[in-house]
Structure formats: C-alpha cells, structure tokens
Length: 229
Image (cartoon, rainbow, N blue to C red; front, side, top):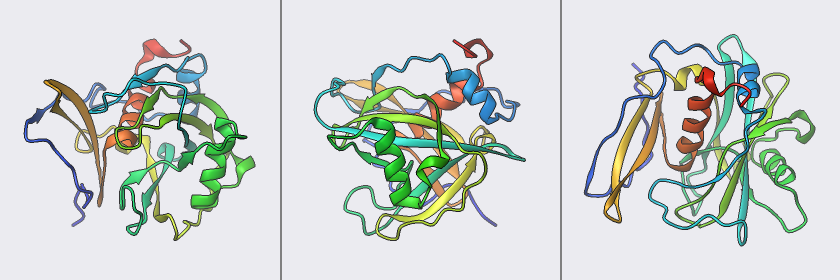
C-alpha cells in the first residue's frame, strides 16, 4: 500500500512544535485554472521573508525565477513539480518548481520558461503568464526568487533532463488540499517560532520554499474574498 511522505530529509531544529490546521476547509472545492486566474489577476506581489530565512528581501544581487505552470484536467487544476536529481550538489532529491538564476539580459519570464524548457522540455511558447506569487529570499542561497504563474492549454508531454531532474510530478491542487496531505510545523529560529509548511504526497514530501509557494497559492485560490482583488 502506498503511503504519504517521502525520503526527503527534514532538518528540524531541536525546538519545534506542531502548527495550525489547514487554513482551508476540509471540503474545499476543486480549483480550476480559471479560479487561479481570477484570484491572481489583480494581485500585486510583495517581498516577504520566508520560514527560517532572516535576510531582508532586496531586488539587488542574485535573482531567480520559477515557473508555477498549471493546466486543467478532470481533477481540476494540476501543477508541475520536479524531483531534483540525487547527484545534484544543492537540494538533491528535493521537490521543486522548474526554475533558476536570471541572466543579466533576461526578463523573469524568459528565465522561468528557459529553465522549464531545459529541465523538463516544456515548450517555451506553450505557457501564458497569469500572475505571480510573492517574492522571497531563499534561506540557503540568499537569492531573490520570483514565482510566476503560467497557464498551459493542456497536459504537456514532458521529458526530464537527467542532468537536473529525476522525475516530473503532475499534482492536482485538489490533492494538495486534502487533510492527509497538508501539515504545518513551527520551528524556533532566532528566539521566535516560524511557520513551515509540508505537503505529503504519495512517495514524496514537499517542504521549504516550494511548500511556501504552494501554501500561498492554495490560501488565495480557496478564499472567495480574494477573487479579483
């Protein structure tokens, strides 16, 4: 029998505790790409500090962009995640969105779609921009990350690059909203507790920056008060 959660190592500090329950209802509806577009079409992203990271966000220095690509299916909106190759020097085996560093002559969108093409073979002209999540500084590389939301017309035929990606995951937002998938922990860093989010998929655990992005996406798309605001 398949079980939730995976082998991804979780570097919990000595002092931690269980966090709050899911901020969405157990009977949350099945979001579609149209719901995501409605929730983020007028949203102005801000810069935040994530989890244990204590760096002040800045638009100077290193920049990265990730592609949060979505397409509709019978299970509602599906997003594309990758499991990083185990031989990678940084974050081996971790679950992430396609993305990477922004070159000096690139826009954020160009960087995100280029990285998605290099990592999983997504055709760059297949994605259409539909908004963005909040920007944040990573705790490891201190790079300012911009998550860009994108719509795909259909399920893409993707091939992971063995240099970077072990596997491609097509994950319905509906699965991420299940009570048995989501959990929150509070980690003590610098004398204060900070929320850390986790999504236990079948065979994998999503945490860290990727879970933070998914959390914001799901909170906003399941809150009717945010639609179009």
